[in-house]
Amino acid sequence: MYCAERLVLARTGEADYLLVVTVASMADYDALADRLLRGDENVRRFRTSVALGCLKLGLQVPVRAG
Image (cartoon, rainbow, N blue to C red; front, side, top):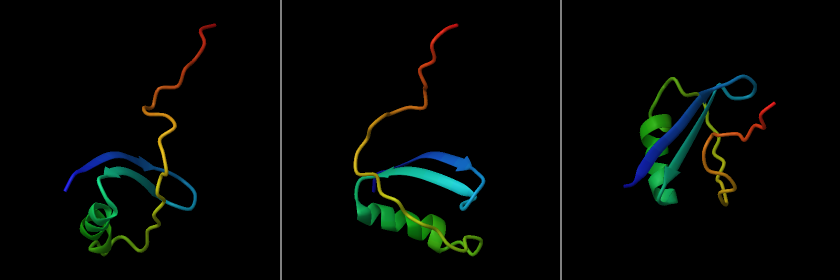
């Protein structure tokens, strides 16, 4: 199984955390969700969104100088 856990953000609003992961297949995602989320009694619920493509890679934001 290939999985790179990439980004975890604490946030406000509907969800307390946003976990961004990259997996090779939906079967790998399902195994990851079983291991990290479904088996944890502290996780009441979670929602999954799947990216259909990559528009930008990285966290850098271009800023013009002065």
